[in-house]
Image 1 (cartoon, one colour):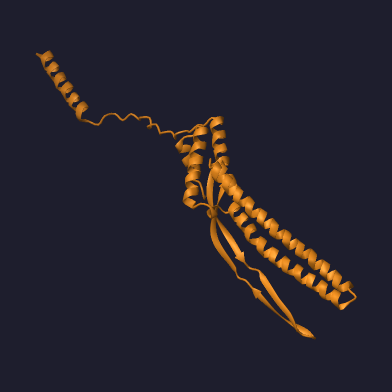
Image 2 (spheres, rainbow, N blue to C red):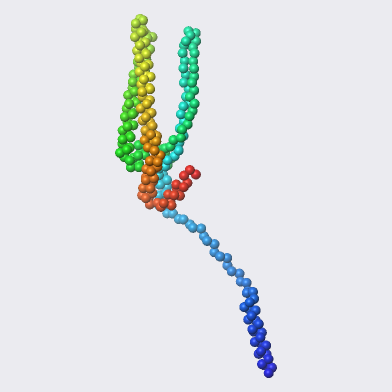
Amino acid sequence: MFLTVIAFLLSICSAYADENSDGGTPLAIPASPPAQPQPLQLTRSSSQLMAVQQYQRQRLQIRGEMSFHGGHTTFYSGHRYRWGGVGMAVHSPVTTSRTWGVYQGPSRINVPDFLTMVGQTEQSRLLSAEIARAERASRAWYTTAGVGVAGMIVGWVGYNTATTRDDRITFNNISLGGLGLTVTGLIGGSFPAGKATRLQRVPQASMTSDQAQQLIDTHNNTLRESLQLSADDVWAIESQRGR
């Protein structure tokens, strides 16, 4: 009977212990902190790095420019009176205009070379021929101005060494004729010279900025493919433009 009572008490204690074990607070065991995500490491080979650097050197891009005009002073003088003279100075104000140019790296590209680089060889040839014609016309006019300067010198020397009135009149006319040739040659040569310079250095004289940008995009895309660069590589370079 005594053993039966003890067994009954032990069974009750065991059941009570099981209830506390299921519903109580479990034993706290420190857990290791969760692993932090590691940043993605982008690795490039030396060949990829060289390709990116080569793309940066050879790519074409449009950059804005600022042109300044005027700012010169013109003097007009005359000798109205025997004992003195009168004069006037006219100052031209400086004006600015926004333009653009094509660059390869830090270097500015003239228009014929740009057309050749983007595959427009026929257009480059025609433009170069037009520039050459303008330069020949400019040289012809400037040669005329040179002949006029020579005539002015001959007339001045002859006038100062002449001994008769008729000789002075003749050499004076030679000097005046030389002056006319000089002025005409300088003015006539400035127009084709300016045209040649503009056609060679100013892209907007022969194309619009949209046309130039389309040619540049095609050239840069072909360069990217030849260097086996991804679009992300090029985007990383182009997105830094102007920073």
